[in-house]
Amino acid sequence: MLSDLPSDRFLVRAAQLPDAEGLARIATRAYQQYLPLMDRPPAPMQADYSAHIAKDDVFVACLEDRLVGYAVIIRAEDDGYWLDNIAIDPDVAGRGLGKTLLGWIESWLSERTDSYQLYTNIVMHRNIDWYQTLGFEQTGHRTVDGYQRIYFSKNLTT
Image (cartoon, rainbow, N blue to C red; front, side, top):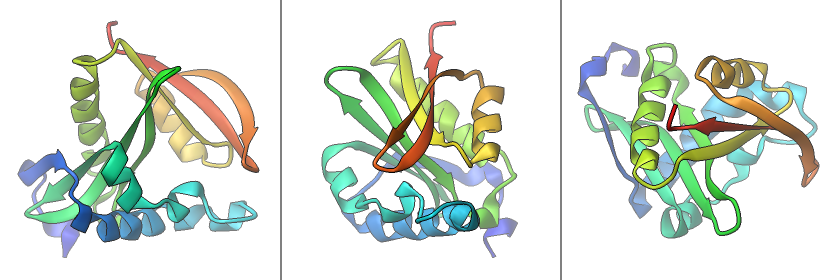
């Protein structure tokens, strides 16, 4: 069982095309809790992970060679780096792996930029609280493609 795996065997690596199916599986499992709160599936449940791997910076988190999480980083020409999505398999959630993965991502980003941005759906209160606890600051609210989003940014130099 995944929950029995030791956290000291946590490894982050660049995603490869064969990982796309695993990313979709984790997204479905991680975001299904929000289905009753939304009028359609959350965007990460509908993402094309093969396309992300081909054009963006995608990293996977593994425990003992098992894919247990991922992060998708997008570089927007006009406004910098975005954490498009980060998710941990619910079987291993609550063990600090999301925070560890985010720390790894921030180390990677700090070599490329001074700050980055993200957004999350307004109904995802757990995510909103988590981002604020980790030092993100709210920068706005917008509706995009029918999704009500809260935007955040984080300075990596302070």
